[in-house]
Length: 234
Ligand code: DC
Image 1 (cartoon, rainbow, N blue to C red):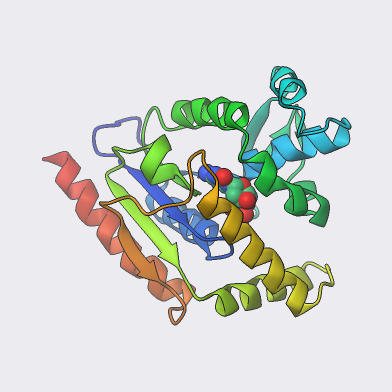
Image 2: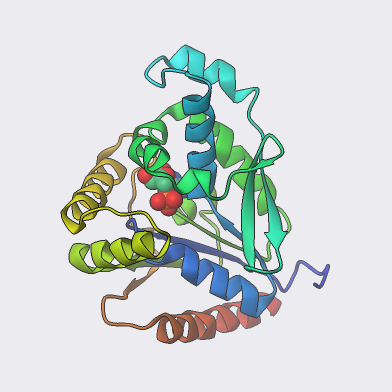
């Protein structure tokens, strides 16, 4: 990987739940030899800590106090090309996707102290550019000056179908109706919360991927990224 930062850019990918944001961010990072961070994993790791330690997340003082004890890190996994999530040194990549965490992460992500704590770490991760980060507020709050911002969307049914398939493949049996309800609820909380709601950055490129394959989408965004990289070299 080059140590030169001048020709590296920041790619911010935001959008609704189960839109394929992390798949896209990961694909771009692999092609460009960039760091890939899925910021949702950070909110999930904080949620896991609170649940594991019996901390009531409606007690904002207790949450704030516990943040001092939370260290979320990532380690590149060369087998899966994934950036595996570690909570206080322990790999939690699988546990943060459990139903329990998925059911509680949205309310936890609305807590201001949690967002301030994680946004600070996200800034540090992007300090040298050469990063693709996906989330809900990456192009609006975390990296408002990102050279490329993508806003991904797809119909609710398509997203629920993808999530249903993914859960089934991972051996987690849930009814389609349950998955559809979870996707709809998360959309509602993410878009209506008062702190950093999910919204499109004015300068984001909007892509509806309901009818796009992963490869088509990757090729499209990669072409855009290469143009922006060229532009940043001038
Ligand atoms: O992308 P995900 O489903 O793993 O995200 C989990 C939750 O975290 C989701 O409810 C939205 C929230 N989140 C957020 O508020 N801001 C981000 N930058 C990323 C995720």
